[in-house]
Image (cartoon, rainbow, N blue to C red; front, side):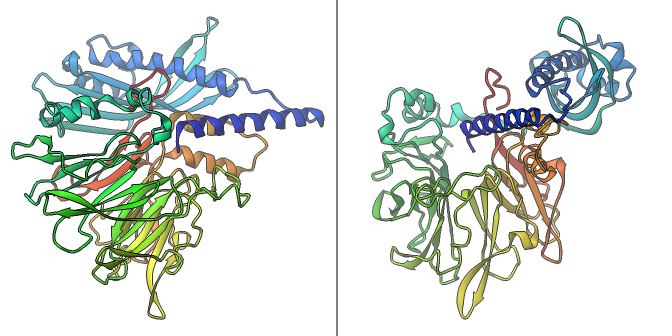
Length: 536
């Protein structure tokens, strides 16, 4: 889901509200004008957010206002962050619920503290709290009360878990200096759009040991008109461009995979492009040889995945598409919460010797194959020995296809509603893991979290003429990510809100980040909200 679509949706909803109000006036139905419109409420939230930021920043100093001193819990936070060095003191306030009464404004917010103590210990604190405000005659707001910090999370570490190694790894590489470091805005002014470069284009990357030296190399996909880049991992950890023949593909490439297509024990390369899946053979780590292109029915390619779904020893390829090219011809219209005008995903069965067959319909994957599919992941969720397929779809329901054998044929059956993994929302990514180590695979779906969306959709006058079910759907779209936990019956339950706030999430993955034997979650997120750029 891109920002252009989000804005269009809010405009459409606002227009619908206005039209409904006019109709009610025409029918002489009495209505009560809300004290705050949505726009006024959002302005108030922004002003109060600034006031809260200033108030809570005092916890870094010795001058803590009495309203915080008199409320349980804030002193304890102040004790931890007061010794922080100013250079590392950071605070972020997010208001995600706002309620207006005849006299006051009551809200629910989250605050995140980041600090470094004088002993160099890193401190991270997250807390949720309530507060109440009154509007002043000058348009400002006065705080009346603030509740104690709740749902408190405190992390302390003697060192940072991650450091930025960009300069050391690629800082001296000309390809990075002159090309990759420039960013999309730079190239939009220099390359004609006919080549496939666009402000809302998506380009991925992949890691793999291209030259067989035991070190992961990096392949970076680029928009049309710019060459893809293969950077080789050197012995000292730096990534260098060795000008590998066949690697500098010029067509727009959304996704790439290092996989051994021909079973010769080296990493070949597959590229997802508008013209199809490009197959490149790895010739002993010296060059890439074009072996063919699998023609696809759509052009808005996104996720490219590989598996051996039929267990015949040959890798198969699955590609997803978001926008559909035939929706207008079929008279399909876009529906924000249940879009069925998307592209048709495709499965290609590997036959060996660089031969593939298109088997989407033959395997049952053509069922409801009209979603805006942004990501897919294979995993043997039911532990029966073959890979099943989960697809994360934007604008609606996700899908889980169970891999079954029917009449000696491999057939996928869509069972997402049956087992509770539809997760209706803005599906961006999917990752499988076993977070609780019970031996049953769980699935984490990246969606989009929006503080503004949570505030607006919970207002009493939001979509006043709509059914409650529709309001719940729109609230769900602002909720964020979902961890679906599998039980022994093979059903899944939503873990709850503690893992939902991944911000404007794009990708997510299970990984044991701190090497303690438990799988953690890493979420790539961010979007620039007007002039405020600290949400990245």
